[in-house]
Image (cartoon, rainbow, N blue to C red; front, side, top):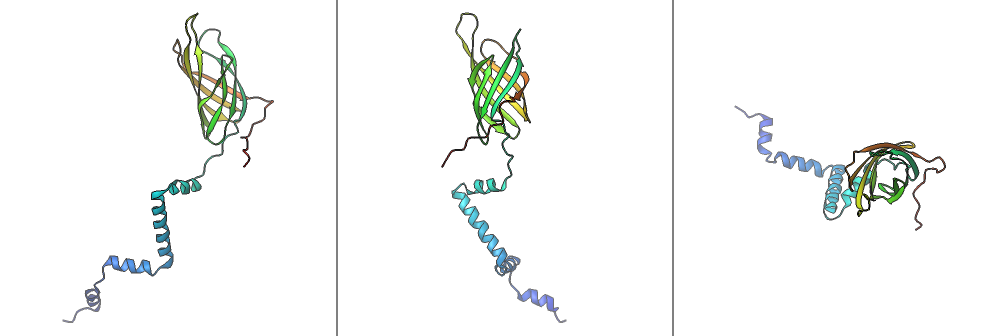
Length: 187
């Protein structure tokens, strides 16, 4: 019985499947170039933050909402006869938010301010007093959602002399102040 030609070819060809794949890759210039560039990028990103920079170029981020400027709100606090006109002065660029916010008419600086898409958050601090005793620090945490010329806020106060429930209110951009753009820093 004479052996089959295909059978003889497989018996005499001692190259493994991996050897055959390697040969095809080496003989294909575009695939070889792609592998070489990928290896270089992986090697560089091991020692630098190149990967983060490359991903930053590829990601599509939302533009910062035009929030800079003055905003006003009518706020009903959680104690009797506590209806106040409050103002918010926002500035910043990218995800940073700073400025001032009033609490019962008294202006306080904004801490830990940030914007992510249409959401913003920040913290203010104010003294809270009870009678003639010493004052205690109250921390006000604001979270808001921007929608055009309105920001819907929820504010939670902690610390001070008394417990408070979250307060909801809406701030509106003042008509006499156009949306401010971030200041450009000259080179």
